[in-house]
Image (tube, rainbow, N blue to C red; front, top):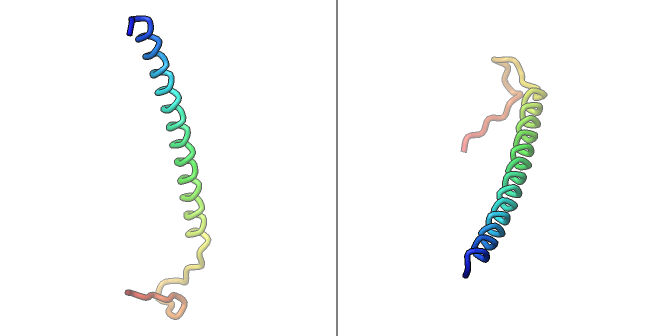
Length: 65
């Protein structure tokens, strides 16, 4: 393999690696967005829960395995 072919081959390899890294970064970004959205929904669900005042019995079922 001569020098020109080697340089061309390395250029293609680096371009492919760059595309793969870009795709991986985009997928990670989407995953983080999804996790943040799920977390926000859980916080909203917790904040909207009807929690009885302390000392009131009969409103919460607590089962231990």
